[in-house]
Image (cartoon, rainbow, N blue to C red; front, side, top):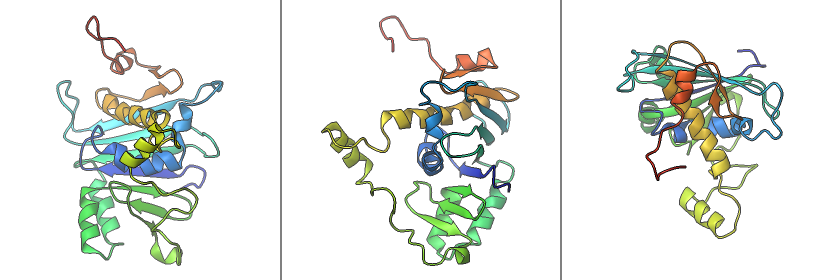
Amino acid sequence: MDAAAPLARVRHQRQLGNWASHTANLAFMALKVHELWLAEPPKQPRPVIRIEAQSSGINKLSFPRWELIKWEIPARAEFPPITFVWYNGAAPGARGMIETLKSTLDDEREKGLTDFAGALIVGAKGRIHSTGHNATFRLLPKGQFPGIDTQRPVKVESSRGHEQDWLLACRGGKPAWANFDYADALNEFLMLGNVATQFEGRLEFDPVAMKIVNNADADSLLRSDYRQGWVL
């Protein structure tokens, strides 16, 4: 893997709209993808996220049985361009990745959790694998990272739990990690994957304008028509 273009692989056995906000969170936050939404003033040319999906087939009435979605993310903050890859269900390559990860684990319970969900961040010097909630993680290959404590964060404060963080923020404390500036960008990013499964070819999304700029039909799926009297 080219060190200038590391890969963040995120896969899950359930839908993007349910578990992805947990599974993808570590990579999305650590690699500062949300900063693309917060550019002020907007960069010129504006940053564009490109999304493309393979799936079991386009069905306008339901989601596909399996999907493989790629987001090409431009440079932001101090980070170079990266690619997110989402594997869902029987997507090509998903089973092989799971079995490879299992071979690095000793704990049978952790092997079972790997079947259920997980995220893999691939860098130039190694990989970080986390469980579905990003609650625990490991550095791979294990022999390359001796003596590193993976039980507690070093550079950030430990969360007190999302309910407690939210309550303290409401009372005037520090903003929760999942504050609206961050969480809305994460969920918008993920839902672009669902939109991509409904179209052939690559979509181009401008996070500042919050628009798909190369496909008007796809862009129309980003918002709903509300009944009179119910407007956001």
